[in-house]
Amino acid sequence: MTKRVINLFLYVLVISFAWEVTPASSETETEKVRAQCRNNNLLNVAYDCDCIGKKFEAARERDASTGYANVVNQVLTTDVGECVQPEKIRAQVVKKCGMTYNIAYAKLHDKMKLGKSSFCHCLADESLKLLEGMDPKRIPTLAAGSTRALLVCRKVASYAVPADSPFHPQQPIPIATLSGDEDINVTENQLYLIVVNGNFDLNRLDNTRYAVSDDYKSDRNIKYVTIKDQPVTELPVALIKRGAEAAPGQIEARAISDVVDVAVNYNLAILVRGSQLKEILTRVQNNKRVNSSDYYAIIGDELYKVSDLQA
Image (tube, rainbow, N blue to C red; front, side, top):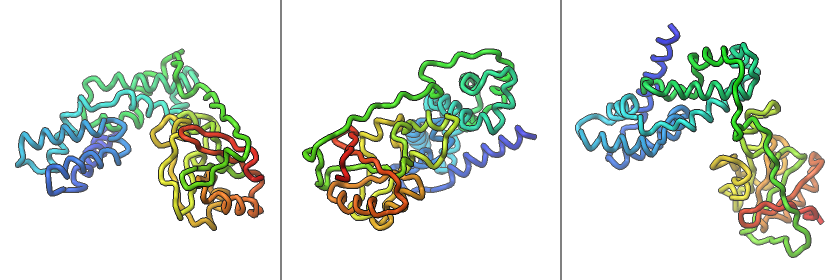
């Protein structure tokens, strides 16, 4: 019964993916396939979506008479071998297992008491072994958890944790401190980051490592608020470097009158331009719910603490 339900789910997944859009031109079709792949939380882990786009394009060229949906279905169910991303699947299994070990099925299956880190790495490695000869329709769900891998790992008495495991504590990256008025730049191109009430941890921007930690909170260290008038629209390289993902967070634009309250209420860091600095500092100082504030200057691709910014 369970197998039948899984197969039905996979069939619906593939069909819904294929029929979401029926573009007009071949170029648009390929772009849509890539976009749909990237926007699907199962497909974008299992596959390199650019590769899926190329497979679709080649299949379309071989037979231009076949309908768009049928070509997508053909690619996803028969022609994905070269596009599979084993290491991304492994990382996703480790992350999902680490996040749910204490509250879901994983701990129940850890009969030999490996513990979270060892059991999750066992689960990830055993999951990848299933790729060989796997029905392509099942590959997208592999990172969501495999019963076969669980059954293997529940009988394992010990398992080595690799040196690069996200379960190893992250070593904080030092942040140098700027001093002196000459370092304060109030031009539009200079960016500043403000953390109020200690609600944003710059040492935990590696979201995978944070996600598998025991004190993970889903609303922390992932969002920034900026001023709607001249917003900061892209995460600075200095912040991306402190994480391990292409975009460790999202930026929300709000009216300047709301920025500080939003940061306090929802654990957001504040990103502002130098030209906006004076006004936002005044609002931070006058907000009675702000108990503490930390200031950072983003210079090039580096982050610096500014201890006397209020002065």
